[in-house]
Length: 126
Image (tube, rainbow, N blue to C red; front, side):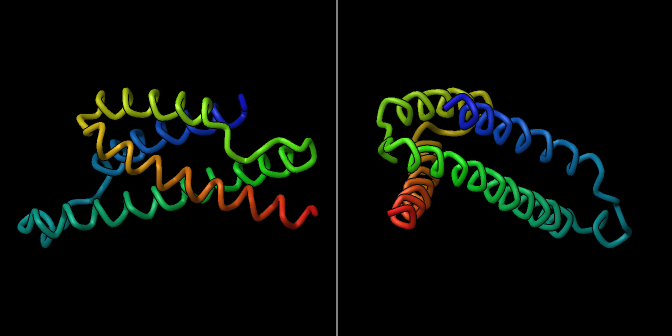
């Protein structure tokens, strides 16, 4: 569980840092300098790519957790743990100006995929 908690905190920190670094390091060409819409779209594309990479990293950690849970007969769903994660992420989201509704929906989607992965691992072990 501590590994999952650390991985998730790392995910949030990396998302924030990647956003800031990318916004500061995107080169301003003549075209992008004269077209802020295109420049910002390029930034968003880069951030989206990094978000997907971080989600992939997160799900690789979920696989490790799934293997551990399968070996130790621990159910995939840990409702109390998810409640803690959700509370922490909603609070972190508020610090970034994100709505609780958005963060809750995002985390529910991520959690659903994590449970799917853990259940798949459990099924393979049987």
